[in-house]
Image 1 (cartoon, rainbow, N blue to C red):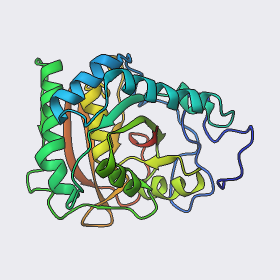
Image 2 (image 1 turned 45 degrees about the horizontal axis):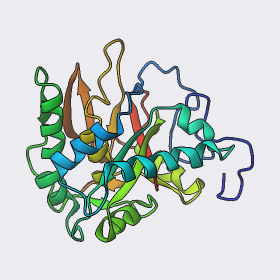
Image 3 (image 1 turned 90 degrees about the vertical axis):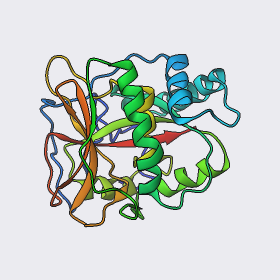
Image 4 (image 1 turned 30 degrees about the horizontal axis):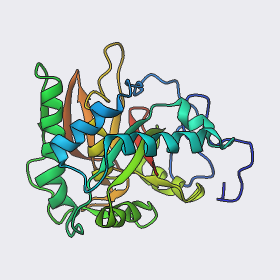
Length: 264
């Protein structure tokens, strides 16, 4: 599937999952949906206020502008026949406050974004716990995968407040398969990394909670770890939330998910 290949046929199934196509890395062609991330309620003012409180205020964005820009992303996708199905899957809006240019991704995540996930989760669910199990630090360990398009999001953060929608629709893909699949999609789709995933979880801290059944874990697939076969991820533990690193060996699992981001 190339950027110009879409007319009315959709690369997304009726549940919003991106269907694996023409990959050299493993991904399950069909999903039994045993693990899945359920759609939370979308309360734009509440999401805006959580991100503003825990990540910092935007440069100029108001909650009305946030809602308008986020809604316009959904409208654009819903009015595009081949892309409409992605909106049938789980999706949450987020914004990223304008920041200085990010020199060290791991340092930025460790000092600002992971603490924001923890404080938002703890405030929303004081009976549960956020745990960062990776205790050896992230500084100097993360870089942007060159095919992910994630660098354009980080560059945009240096210029303005960034608004996006987060779609955890790459379920049951190996991490290298998710990195490979993004190149077959039009340029408006970005593979999610650390800052956007954290912002999505700050705004919607219960995203990985599932009271009946099991949720997927979320890879930060746009980021390369210090070893090619390893990666970083968020994972539910019961109704708690954890962050950690693990070796994936380039294999696929029905438990794994990565996400796409569309900006607006």
